[in-house]
Amino acid sequence: MSGSVIIALDAMGGDFGPEVIIPGAALALERHPDLRFRLYGDEARVAPLLGAHPKVAAASELVHTDVAVKMDDKPSQALRRGRWRSSMWLTLDAVKNGEADVAVSAGNTGALMAMARFNLRTLADIDRPAIAAIWPTLRGESIVLDVGATIGADSQQLIDFAVMGEAMARALFGIERPSVGLLNIGVEEVKGLDAVREAHQMLLGMKLPMDYKGFVEGTDLGKGTVDVVVTEGFSGNIALKTAEGTARQISEYLKAAMRRTLAARIGYLLARGAFAALKDKMDPRKANGGVFLGLNGIVIKSHGGTDAEGFASAVVLGYEMARNGLLEKIVADLGQYHSERRSSAGSQANSVAS
Image (cartoon, rainbow, N blue to C red):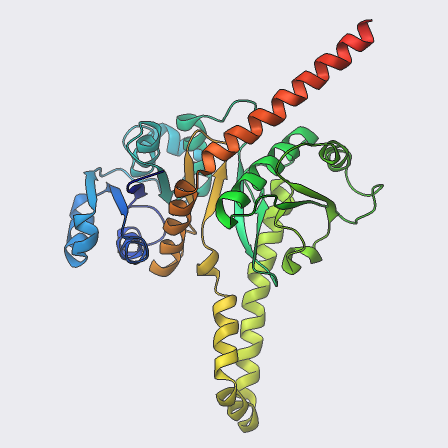
């Protein structure tokens, strides 16, 4: 991709709306001056904030709408009430119509997924989209999917997730052959649900730009044992929320320990640099942004309660996915895999018939 990357922003999404979205866009623009924005939201609220951020104003086109999806709206309600005029719908529509390269919203996750599936549609051969999260690890970062788009998955869907995950890892990390693992309750081949074990056997023979490592366990998530961890949305979402809660728990433990005694406070002063590095590593804002994979377009979901720094991370993630050809990589790898699968199935059918 050459030229600017155009990001469509749902300016009314999230807990705080444009009061976070516009400052977040400003931070992202500082990091990538070739960004351009299409903003969808209430002009009465957005325009004054653009006045306070003239660089964003100069790099943006504002499209007015006074319809916004509420954070507690059910997906079906959001589709009925705001399907054509809401800031969320118009943001996705910009990607569909080629007016933007990426859509970013901090709004209602269920509504965003429902609208994205309805508007952008899924890629050929994809039954269900997935949400991929960036996971901080001891090695750096990994990708985990699905973390909540769908509950349950059969073996074919897990393989699709693996293909989309490795394509995202190549786009984001620049790894030629990302390592991929299936999340399971053990590494032994006899363990796990039937769908997981079936997917494992199928992945062993795949000829794609991935290095399949077999099963991985929950402890491998933080270790960064593989570049891509594949699971279905129920267990993936629980793992994500558990990790976020554990990070907050450890942070509170450390704060309490540092205040407990005079010696502890002195020790904190001596080790401030180390604690600052730890805080930065555990900062959830740095990994904010779930990527909707399996759609005819790039959609990034920011955490609804994030601040400007966190929203900027989601925008930058979208920028990197567009700049590094995420969609093209996914389409190519899925096409190769499903072509080989159909060819293999045809060969087996002919063999049985003869």
